[in-house]
Image 1 (cartoon, rainbow, N blue to C red):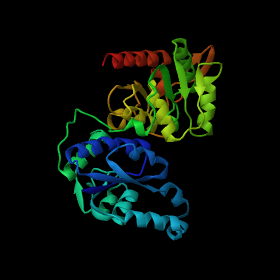
Image 2: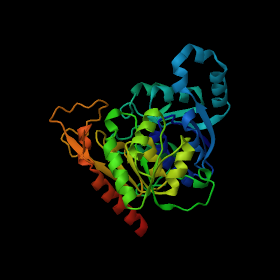
Image 3: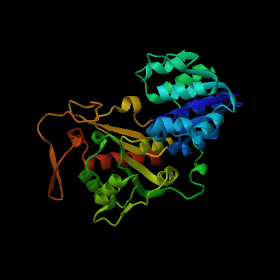
Image 4: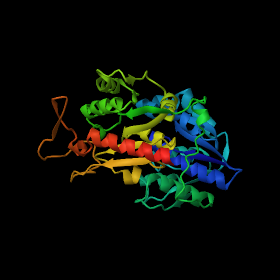
Length: 356
């Protein structure tokens, strides 16, 4: 039996789908998956042994010029690859119009969530069959329910296995470096950024406790932030710009991770690394890191979580200081996440990991 998964982006959403793949493969040993995914994320599905063929799509790049895309060879090649196989089932695990279109372009019975339980209800126009999955459950559970109903198998909700074959990521037997921590400081929304001075203070606390700190980055603004965090601290390393597989390798070799709300935080969870995630405007109950040794620090500010890309706080300004340098805590919902508290929680999480 061959099934096509359509889950094209983003990184966190793709990772949220992996436990459902593990559930299905355990229940149906003759089941093989192909997966359509954005070209930047092709590595992730390939790390799961139940996924055979990964079909890259370039929607983010193509939509810059839709007419040129429809006429060029690259789009035709994608369509031919997509239609070269007749699938027993096509699962749109995303619930967006773009994923619905891709599902319908493929050859097979298309299924997805009902129009009351997805972000873009018009996507259901492309489905042959729909399943209602509650809105108020975590994204991982929602996808697991969809797969279990579509493929008719049961799963243990209390057991979570992303199914990643780490040998496909790392390719070595290098042991975990128990005195190394990765700071995942980059994210998309401006409101999800923990203040730079807090990161820098946390780096000093970590290195004073004998840890080496690794700072990955993906663009120039993240590189500038990483350089600021690492300033005057020889035990903080700003990594070279790495592909996704390279960042995964560094995460997998480290004792743990401290992250903002970012897709790479979900990658750390999928790799079962102890992770402290910092949430201000967003709600981890629906889409936070999910799995073993995951700790969510949520804001205690009255307006959080607002789930807004632009901060609407209109109360008195919140300030703090690092090495006698005063700074404004922006957004103020992160004022409850002091670096000292974050580090204490991280050390506690590492102790629990060592005891398990």
